[in-house]
Image 1 (cartoon, rainbow, N blue to C red):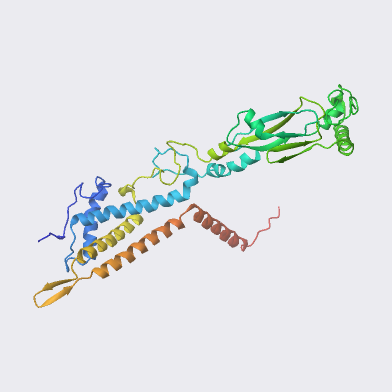
Image 2 (image 1 turned 135 degrees about the horizontal axis):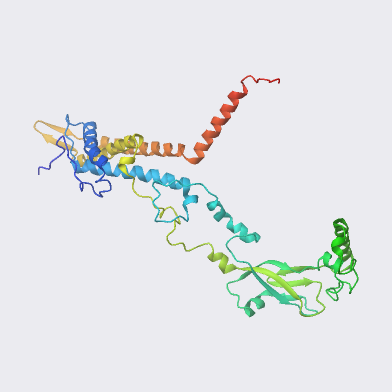
Length: 377
């Protein structure tokens, strides 16, 4: 069986690579044959035959470019994932400049805003109990059933507190019978008109005096919430007042974790990075691609030569170097990938900012040693 091997030259045509990612790039078409020559000579041609065909070299070249692009865009995605989540999946990110923003951090901290009631993505609802004279305990489970609240509820705030002291300073008619608050007129210090003319310091002192008097001599307003049972103090002494509260739906909070965002980047798998444009890769990247192509060709040649350990010829046998080729290819590929990843990590946003700060500190240290001129006008 006479299978043709590398003849010493090649001529690339579109369609001769497995995927055709770069076949119509003029620079790729030019470099494909140059890389083939480079790899064949590094593998020993023409002193030794290279049991590969042109298609094998082209395949390795295409794979090397794609591997370089994968490593590059994986690095970019790691560096910018918080900023690009939520972007349109139709936007090609190969040449996009991802501007750092607080969007990702805000998304991560919305949970705290929801719990604190100062934002977030979980709605707070309001509800109330009507008080009944001499009834101290109220059941949130029954309230939820009566108001068709399903999925569980979590109470966030309960508004059960005495009337504000400032109301007691001005108003003469709203305190009768509210949990032990004195009857009409007890603290009506300024009547119902003209209070805007009093100094602020006097108003503050009056409100503080009322609060202190209520705390010492009247029943304290407080509550207990245990196992969805609300117990209020003091015991109401008449009907039709309201105990207001705020709550969230536990089901809504659980569902807020997963938002349906069709057409948007949600994770590293659907960020729209395409294969690189070979002609736009600079000389640094191309040199890495050439070396990685050679490592792949070594690997392929090792597998080819592994078919026969020894080749018999008249009066002797030739031992093939499959093991050496595979070991060298494995080492070279690992070293090249490590070198590329270190290079990318050293150009990350964090590394660049750290280097810039070090340069600034060094410059300031150098300037501090310069003599300082004193100007006398």
